Length: 105
Length: 187
Image 1 (tube, rainbow over the protein chains, first blue to last red):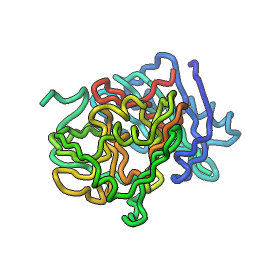
Image 2 (cartoon, rainbow over the protein chains, first blue to last red):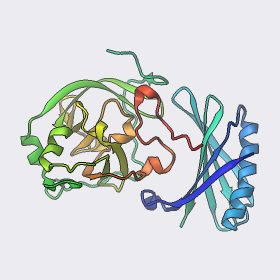
Image 3 (tube, chains in turn yellow, red):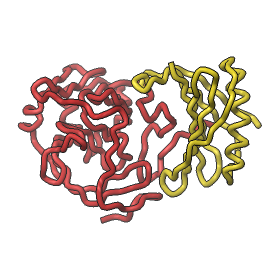
């Protein structure tokens, strides 16, 4: 799977305790079932773990919701030994369009 | 009344979001500032806005999560008119919006100064409730609600894009309801 990963600092989420955002884009990726989404998150978690130099000890599905009639937002937590990284996966007609991870301070 | 935008469903009343908490507003100290790429920086009191020409219309409110409240009566000051007093410089591309709670969002300049873009002071003929953004909120009917910042305190006119709160979490740079512009596509 070809991933495009971009890490950047953001000012607008500081009040929420978020210091860094990681954006993950993919080429055409179908995520038709929750199982597909979980497998995808497991895959990118390894990449994120390497990039950040932290061990991800557990991945937890938090829930999902429709955003309009075509988009679905899936929320996960990637637990490290010190806390967690929040992960939001968005699909459009079951195609992945973006993943955003937020890293606290 | 036109049909609903794609992906929206009607609900009978507003869902209240206060993602950064509800700010306490001291109306004597509250100001709306127009800053950035302007020749004439503005700092307006609530009473200044009340004295300005008020425009009024009925329009639906569309939340990006998928709900729409129909036929809300909005009253307020034209953003286009307000910004004209600030004498904007050439090259402005975005309005970066600040709220009293620390919330931020960004709006393309052409949408910010579009005909029905207002600093709303009333909803359904009543001053805004604190939950709806008292004393003033932005309202741009053709953009999703997260762009219509409550408790607005500053419009910073800029030429470079910068994420606001929800944009940093992947939401769209513009958010046009008729184009289903909910999220950015990253690839």
